[in-house]
Image 1 (tube, rainbow, N blue to C red):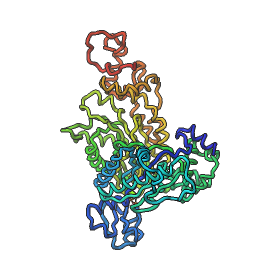
Image 2 (cartoon, rainbow, N blue to C red; image 1 turned 180 degrees about the vertical axis):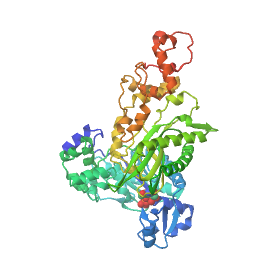
Image 3 (cartoon, rainbow, N blue to C red; image 1 turned 90 degrees about the vertical axis):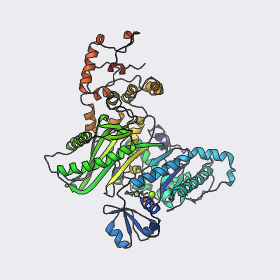
Image 4 (cartoon, rainbow, N blue to C red; image 1 turned 30 degrees about the vertical axis):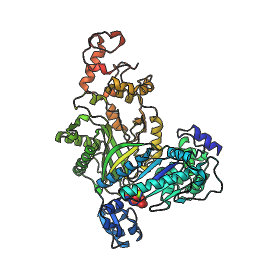
Length: 607
Ligand code: TTP
Ligand code: MG
């Protein structure tokens, strides 16, 4: 045990020393899509209802569940179980997204960090509210609202029982407000960490809530059916664990750390062990705008290039509508394919992404638009990425194609602005692979927590990730952490790009960031983003191609430089070779005379 804690403290995941101070609520909307439909048409409330996407019932109301209709069941199977099942097409996700956003907006009311996990789940860290309430409440009078996982034998000396009782009352209020304002019933889990809050949430479904005290964490975890039930453990990790005869959570609890370390990194081994004991110190991070906006379409098989092109074209049309709604200018595009491997009788996903010029998009009367020519440019880029993923000299069989805009500019600038070239990385958002367990067409927006330096791209396609479209929660927690740990140090290139696009007032705001970046060498090295990329490495190469700026002065960011148009690179190189002909912003050259407005002004050394 001591070994575990010591390891943990020094790991990238931080310490896990039995800290019970937090109060976390996990909220999940009951039969989400079905409830949206039932709110729209209250007559559906009294009948068994299934939400259909292609040939699958993605969810059903609780009336239908009485007949055994389960999530992700084939329509034919569901109809056998419940011939009266009313089916509503749920392929247009617009209303579900809108409902999801309304719930998220209600959760902001408590002014606590809220982290969105896909469409119908959110974490809220109510630690501060609980502390506040405890100041004005008689502790002895506090009681649990809803269900308690297990009665405590003794009070925990740190006072966590009382705090979690108060948190359970906050959870009731949250659920009541969601019901009063939107008529959605929800479930909640209340615990001192996210892992436990999420896992106890579904214990009393529907329309109820469950609290767990920290001392029951390990025993509760041991009741889970398999290691796969732990949210951040994906199929690859499960496979490795099974190969070591670690099947159940209690097997993992008892597994020796040394054995785990033979098969996983040290951090990962410790993390797995801690998870098995119900320990998790990941914070609830306030969710910002979606980090990527993507669409996927899955099908039986497509083996002809022209058909692939049609699929992409249709996806692109729909994606552009979503991007217009979002309002940000995309600067990176990702193509995803799922290839059928006839030999292995399996499918696997591969993605490639590349930066796209913001000038493809224009703002007309405040609305983001793409001209016909812009759309053609995007299609050319898409097919170029496709060609990189597929060897067209050989037969191919695809079962899914996906498109996602994965990085965005926060601010809109004129299309001819130099800033468009320089700010490509300023507000990059991370990328998550989208996957539809049910093989249906999906629209996904990946949300992730906002952190000041979370400007990392993560394409986790081959990592231990098994995300579903609605569940970024299933997304590779562990691989993502690898990136996040690095994100804490913002990449120098991004910071410099940020400076380049900011005016002097704004520069003050980034001065803190600048401090971090100041002394970094410009030796080409992988940015955190690149280090996290697996199969996207080629695309990163695309971006970096031509970026070898041997003639650049040391204060110039190579990434930025390589993103400039060729002519501009040439112009700069010439000026650097012959500084007397330029207005280099070096102190030795500073005079009181106004300087000509050249691009060199933007390459200001850090002071
Ligand atoms: P869930 O929260 O898993 O399911 P649910 O809300 O329908 O039911 P529960 O009462 O058990 O929480 O998923 C939320 C929505 O996501 C669901 O209504 C439909 C959609 N969904 C998919 O599109 N694909 C999937 O594979 C799953 C599981 C759900
Ligand atoms: Mg739900």
